[in-house]
Amino acid sequence: MIDQEQARSRVVDAADALFYRRGIQAVGMDDVRTAAGISLKRLYSLFPSKDVLLIEVLKGRMVEWDEGVSLASASAATPRDKLLAVYDFLDGWFRQDDFRGCAFINSFGELGAVLPSVAAIALEQKLAFQHYVTELVDELGGSPALAAQLAILAEGAQTTAAISGRPDAAFHARRAAEVLIAGELAA
Amino acid sequence: MIDQEQARSRVVDAADALFYRRGIQAVGMDDVRTAAGISLKRLYSLFPSKDVLLIEVLKGRMVEWDEGVSLASASAATPRDKLLAVYDFLDGWFRQDDFRGCAFINSFGELGAVLPSVAAIALEQKLAFQHYVTELVDELGGSPALAAQLAILAEGAQTTAAISGRPDAAFHARRAAEVLIAGELAA
DNA sequence: ACCATGAGAGAACGATCGTTCTCTTTCGGT
DNA sequence: ACCGAAAGAGAACGATCGTTCTCTCATGGT
Image (cartoon, rainbow over all chains, first blue to last red):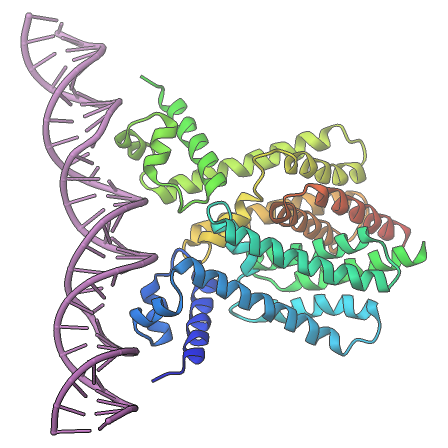
């Protein structure tokens, strides 16, 4: 038999991959069950509903995002380089062949209007990212407005790369960020 | 009885409002029928399937976007002001109480992976906008890279405003655009 | 006035999906 | 070895949804 904790993560991983690739409502619980290699009964004993499972998937995406951004900025020395590392992280992500946009933006568009919990976790993720950027901009001596601008660039790069299918949005966003940062530091 | 053309636009308008407010899969054809005040049979004689209706709705959104951007930039004299007018247009849109993000981004997230026609029209809209921005940037003497950056700012403002629910993303995007444009013109 | 065409209203159909239930099997404790 | 609890496999249920069909009625041409 499979360990409880291991079963949970297998279900979450399977659901994450399916939801992200196909969209949430296009994936049935039976698909999740098959991909996770688990019985339906056990699936429902681990997660009482599809909505709860979805929230768990999105929570997992939140920590993956945080880890990815942290890892990318780990080798950067200055706050400026840590900020720019965000766009390098995006660049690597966009180049993955299964990239299909930001899971939070996609989930918000699909279910945000009908499931308040989805809208709430999407908001939470975006606010957390804005907070991260704001702190680095503050260390750098920049204004909160600059932080908002840098966050908007990151969001725009994600949707642009998703829909166009080309990863160069990360490069353009990075160049724009460099100019905006330089502009503030000059003043 | 209702004129054929009038019936079509009533259906498209009703479907547009419902799809945009609640998401596409959350709206049944019966909801569209009721909102449009039409029989189900006539609805299906006008649009052979929900997918076709959705594409028609998105085509309508494309012309609305173009008209809105054109109208906003009509009073602007210089290419620079025409470019900045895009963000003013976004600002007005974000302030509408039924604003819920970009219909193309939302549709792409919900159905882009499963309906190629949806992915295609989302791509078409984004490319058309990028083309519009690129032409204005070119008139202004700027590079295609600047155009890409300005487009990314507009996309990012839309998702940020949608999820955060606050319209100030348009203001931040506009300020960033001003800096980026000034930066290129100085060089 | 009569009939044929087409439209309206909504029931009906078939498929899908989230969730639960049943039946069988497995397995650990004594 | 035996029994009871739990788990697997998947059938089943109830609801929803896209789409079609049926029945009725209005209407316009002759």
